[in-house]
Amino acid sequence: MSSPSAKYRPDVDGLRAIAVMLVLNFHAFPDVMPGGFIGVDVFFVISGFLITGIIARELELGRFSLIEFYNRRIRRIFPALIVVLSATSILGWFWMLPKSLAQLGSDTFASAAFLANIALLLQSGYFDVESAKKPLLHLWSLGIEEQFYLFWPLLLMLAARLRMSIMAVAAVLGVGSLLLNLALIGSDPVATFYLPFTRAFELLTGAALACGWNKVGHRVKASEWRAWIGVALIAVAAVILDSHRAFPGWWAVLPVAGTALLLSSPAAWVNRVVLASPPLAWIGLISYPLYLWHWPLLVFGGIIKFGPLTLPERELILLASVLLAWATYRFVEMPIRFGVPSRRKMFGLGTSMAMIAVAGIAAIWGGGFDFRLPPEIRAMANVTTESFKWRFHECLLDLSREMTFADTCIERDRRPLVVIWGDSTAGALLPGLRKAQEERGFAIAQLTSSSCIPALNADIVGTPNCRAMNDKVFSLIRQIRPDIVLLHGTWEKHLDNVAETVTALKKETNARVVVLGGVPWWRRGLPSEVLRYFMLHRTLIPQRSPDAAPPTAYDAIMRARLEPLGAEFISAAHALCNVQGCLTRIGDAAGDLTTSDQVHLTEKGSVFLAASIIDRLLGSEASEGKRR
Image (cartoon, rainbow, N blue to C red; front, side, top):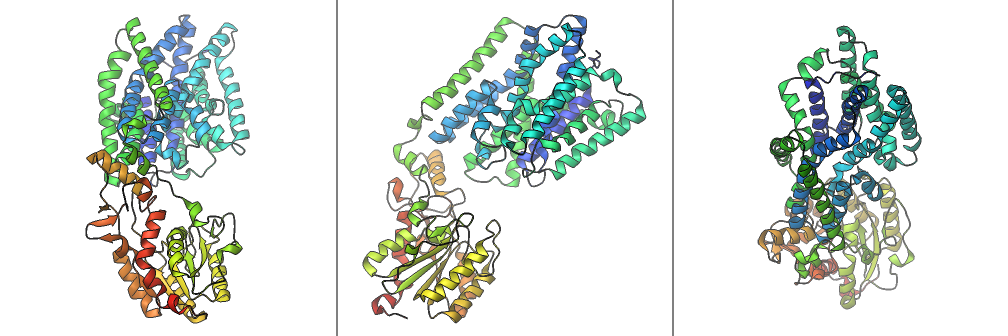
């Protein structure tokens, strides 16, 4: 058994810097660095290499103490983690809705207990949309690492007592972990991502290298080759991998092997000049608190802004992460980690972590402490999109599941007959048109499909069946011969296809073609705007707000393009917005909000809009009641 020298290697800190920068860039600029998540795999190999090397040296000298090992781990891990978990809980108190704060409490408890990977496994995958809203998502890796070190020292002690080769033990267990990873990645990729058994081979690769150090050739030329191949493997993984790949799987071999090759090449130019350079070594020293800080700041930046962060905002958050990481390293980590060990320090760290875990449990039991918000704010901020009122899966189809409208979608016993053709925003018009129908006596044919705008021959990204459905709807319209066809959707990128649709309708039917312009777009979602306004002003959002984006400029473009083709254009924005802003609510109750998310009208919003446009929509058709 032989281990690497205990002498400090700045190139290892430089490699840590590369790892943390890969992760930071992946989280802040995912389109630029889609494979940056492999930085965690680099960390795993480094950790296995360094910590196993320390244990192996102490076992050789006969002075390894399990208690002292865990003492060092606590002083290394707890200080910065306690600070970040505390800051995250405080931010959650001020900026999260009760349900979200309760979830944060659950994640805080799991993180304090080093079970974050298990908790996230039971919730969702790392790359899921909802995961992007979890401030403690990134602590899954810390859970895996600490679970590994709960058992690995015990196995090393047993191997030493039985005079077994630690390198052989690491190699056998590592191969077994890799095989388990490959066996499960196809059937259960989320479990394979989060379970310590399927990720252990990464730490064990570093462990095997640490124990087989004397078998690695240290000639400069061989080191140069290994180092450059290692750089190439990590670079290739960072460039070609993305969230759609089955990871870890075979793909994890790229960053793991690349990291091992770099660790085995301290004499190479890349290690001596690049990785060991003072800037990279400094980033490596603060890499742990930097990793802890960056993701909660990015998540809360989006929460506080209530919307996607701009490029400059993300850059500023990363800069703030570096400053906080340095301050945490200098004023928290160094005094505790490198100071004289004492029982008082250990008791303080353990008590602090236990208190954080208790606070997390309290947030769960307290339902996210909903008393923080007035009842009307809670109700408005929790308004949901009631798609069942739009006859979802009947007359508003999910084209990934169904392609046939229910018989009830077309009312054939009255005239005039109004066809609603469009996407889910058109489906959201149904409650308002139903209310208007009570007094005006017209019939409705609802032919709507989620994420499928009413535009013939348009290929809609993410909705491959849309083109076929639009052909089907057009054929139905020719069969039922309606009096009015109402087109509505989010169609800014397909104006030519909308124009083609208007032309075809005017040619193939005798119906009036009415195009309803887009409704205001609430970038953060109107319920979130309610919460944001309350957080900033401690009062209810005004009835009109300038924070929506009324599509009035595009309305003018559509009107100019479509009216010469025979369409009649009605602006929804003119009905819902004025110089003071766009309508947020009809009254003071939760159900009075006009929009349930970014763009879908609530029932009250739908009724208001329908009442505003019904005369123009029906024109003379309702009074004449003629059949075409």
